[in-house]
Image (tube, rainbow, N blue to C red; front, side, top):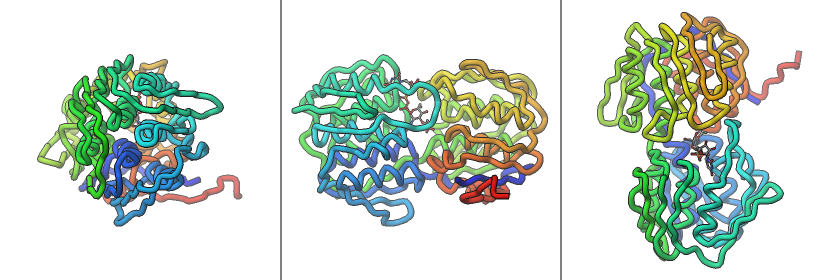
Length: 425
Ligand code: EPU
């Protein structure tokens, strides 16, 4: 296990380059299972979720190699198994995309029940309902999901809840199905549009990604020998925007897509921060005040749940009381107990948390409970008085590439202690 030791009181200043989006990459890599031949993916984040996914793809018979730091060459010509290794797939959430992709390719998929961050109940009933509507039989037992069919036939599918995973999984399962699939009440996140763009670039016929309804006309094959670049990471961009405000800093964020950030940009301006937007850069500058604001997380274009903890750090330092209402995950306030150890005044109950702003956070030993909580606590350590020890940083490594290097370039003082043993002495 690794931990971070963070010397605090840092005002973050300078430039940072955003990596490719985790939640797009972990869907596009399985999507290559639907392609005949070789796909080259560029701007792939070098993070642990991507590495595990590549290992799983290799076990299915794919040939995968990194041809540069951020480019993956994936050859799916010789896929020889539809059984994804259960121990590996149950380690992370996005393994559920292997079901849609294998079902689409081989009419059979067996995958361990997906794991991932502990954010509360994470059902997959909408994925299953969709696969069944396309003609698959789905069995969930003994910790695994098995989906089989003789053929997939397009169908109308109305989702009861707006789900990122179910939307992408049903796109994957239906691109090679016979006839037309219409997905209604879908999620509209930038990574959904990116998955559809990738599939269309290799010959799929998907229309309407980014709106409430997606129409997929099945095609007979997707053609490889194609290069595609993954979209920049919306959540990493927002993490640095929050870090600029929380640290009273000034950060120029490069290689991002500013319009993906509208909900956070609006809140930063409401808090009194300065935001300067150019084509693919956002500069966020603290302007001597953090006004309290209220937010409610919601599917895109609403405020992203995956930025709620990072904004929570900013609000713990606002000039007054703010309220956050979490609309997606019931257990997303675990980080507030850690911030309270650092002197924050946050009362979290159910899906609501009340933040009474304090002047300063102070260092404490703190524990990340999930990926985004980890990012938020890292920001808290960077700004707090004293030396913070941040544990469970393997969560952060799942989704942020070279995070300590990026923060160090902005002035943070962070050391990674690898394989520590706290009881050694
Ligand atoms: N839901 C159902 N049934 C389903 C699927 C979802 O009831 O079949 C509910 C969930 O319980 C939740 C809501 O619908 O209340 C939204 O869940 P969604 O399916 O959209 O979430 P997900 O696909 O499991 C992805 C991201 C999460 C992100 C959420 C919401 C990936 C791999 N994960 O999860 O990202 O929080 O969408 O935007 O794309 C992260 O990156 O840190 C992360 C947790």
